[in-house]
Structures are given as C-alpha cells and as structure tokens.
Image 1 (cartoon, rainbow, N blue to C red):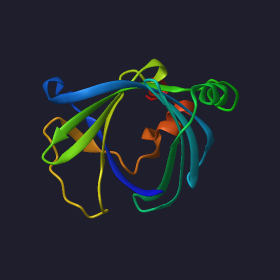
Image 2 (cartoon, helix red, strand yellow):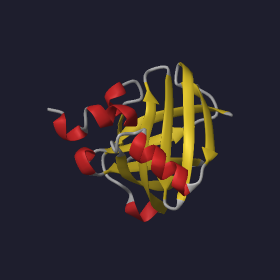
Image 3 (tube, rainbow, N blue to C red):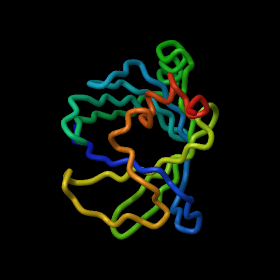
Image 4 (tube, rainbow, N blue to C red):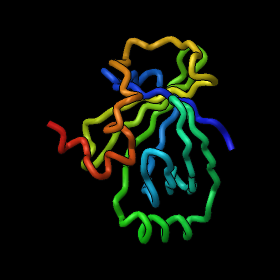
Length: 155
C-alpha cells in the first residue's frame, strides 16, 4: 500500500526530445466513484489491478498488484463492459521529478494531460514551460470520468 499524491496539468506541447520512454495503456473500471476506484490496466504486456480510495486533499490510498493476462482480459471484457481508456504514456524527467504525459486516443483524442507524483501535498516542484495549467481539482479530467463523458463531447 502506498499513499498517492499527484497533481494533474494540461499540456501545451509535448517535449518530444525529452521523452525517456513511452508505452501504450488500456484500462477499464470495475468500480468508480469519488471515494473509491477499482481499475484494471494493461501496460504493454503487464496487467494490474489497482484499488484507490479515501481521498483527503490530493492524497489517497493506492494498492496495485500484477495479475495474469487471462484474468485481466476477462475482467476488462466482463466487468468493465468493454468501456476502456486508451492512451500513450510518455515519461519525462525534469529537475528531479518524473512527469507522466498521457496522450489519449479514441473518444478522448486531442486531450493531453501531465501528472506529477509528489512526496507530500506541499512539496515544491518546477513547472516546465510545456505545462499549460493545473486541472487537479477538475473531475472531468479524471480517467474514470472520461469514459462516461469523453473529451470529444466537451463543448
């Protein structure tokens, strides 16, 4: 178990020259609400079940475990109703922090969001020039909400 503390930002422009590595992600939700989330994720050839909950500020509990591919595929198909988020995640190092930049596909194409995980809620960090503005408190940017109201439906 860990405590996840992350902040979320929109991206002006992806700094392609600074990308350390990237991979495709496919994920669905078994349970999702403001208080708790159960997610199944495929990250390349690895599969995970993640449970998040009890949000206080921008901190929350996070439990993540690897699971077999066959189990993950059954869960994604039968428990997530084949409603999946698909994205490419780029990892960018900047002044001692790793930024995760998600480029969404499908109904969320055009949305690019960067997240930074912190050690405490008041930890300071440098905001790179390619970051636009913070959306941590805007629930429409949560992956679980992008399934029911995708980016292509925003006006």
